[in-house]
Length: 419
Image (cartoon, rainbow, N blue to C red; front, side, top):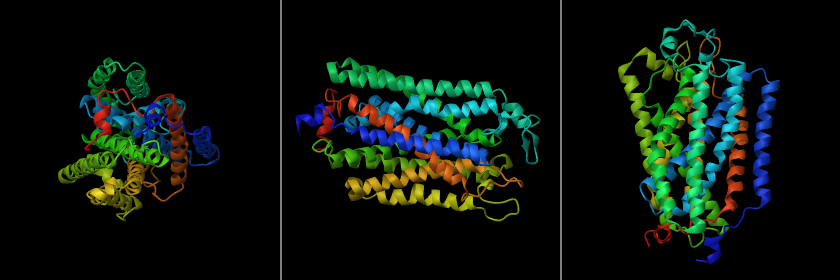
């Protein structure tokens, strides 16, 4: 292993970071242009919510993986942890990108989240203000609490990220073991904070779009997608750095196998959580719960809608396909194969978020709008726009410190993982 490989990263060209930012600005500009000229501004706002939530979920997953790394004193993930730390640089920009949704919520209440407008008409339920279910939840579901909670979410994630990044990066300079202990303290505090904030973020941002619905599994479902998104992003980064030569002599097949095992484990976990939620609601057959799935299966006249087929795509794409592929040792340790699996899962996570958010858009009959509509264009521009900024934040942070944490106490175990 060369000294250069461990002391300084091969700096990505400025043009690479610049192109990522340019792509991000282009996606955001197209989304903003659509909001100005399209009559379906509601649909564009919801599509933008999909884009911001998607990349925020991946960043939360990276934060969780770092916290889990420190609390378990893991060794295999030391070199990959540094790349997740760079990914945390996106949080402050995600907070800025979420701001338009907050501004819109104050200027036009109910435009994205219907419960913010007490005069909003509910199909068969009068208005939000006269709805007994809303009245019971109004202490939580109101604009000031929503705004304050969102600010707390991002401040918590940004604060934890700054703590972890400072401890890790400073240890590169002085090698003091106190930074390892500091990171463990951050993990002990940060894990419950991250768990609570991601749960309430999922409830406020996504679940409350249809506030009549009840589910005790929702935060865990979001957690599973966050971690899967982080693991798959980690795979893409590992393969990219491996092919560039940065990780040659550092990352071996056992590192790929370890992250592949986690991908398999959380594939099963996601399936368990999602099936449990569906089965319990189906078994209880309570109208206040079943309507959420009915909207995603049937139109008001009993015909099957497009979301039913999306649900099947999620079932097979989110569980069956990756589960069967990740059972193979060869697939997990072959860079170009596990990269394709990671891309597949990241795509299905996006579809899963669309499945949870976009059916809240209703037509005149109270049916969810079809999946194959112009909304998908704005979902694409939003995901590309927000994603470009996140990738730029990562690339901007990348050259500021060493490629791997060379003075971490467990770096030796990591480099000889399973050798």
